[in-house]
Image: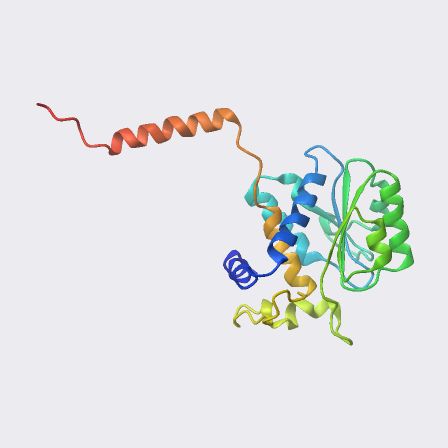
Length: 229
């Protein structure tokens, strides 16, 4: 989903709580990240890999000047020959401690193994955030959590981005008229990733001084010459 469609989606949701809610959650994510901390770890469940969110956060990190927003995708199964940035297994969670941020994203209930790793990461000092379908055990472990609609029964959550009509670039946004619609996980991820890149850090003062001087120079060049008499 590109920036134009995110803007359109926000217009559709203007009368709901989703804009403020996703921005609040994105604010929790940004405030948990430290420029020289343990980094952002993004992990899904055994049946759902949030690679789509990983790509969007990586883009937002580049566009907003917040490199700490670029995540490390932790995978339950690493295929042979995977490139280094896609070859991080669940053992990485064992090293997550103080300064690290763990974002768990899944539309399905996390298994006991994942919950145990998340518990260990929090006990070691990591900040835990959850974006899911409202699992009580996961929310108990999370410092902040955001709930999206669970996928329809019988739906493979890995196919949600492809089958969801609100994400098809050739179709108009088609959300229910309910003033507070329960959005699917993929749509919520787009709102959160877009909000995470907003309000980036202010530029250093010397950069502002340079831009101020440049602006004054441009104004001087554009101004008409003073009268000669």
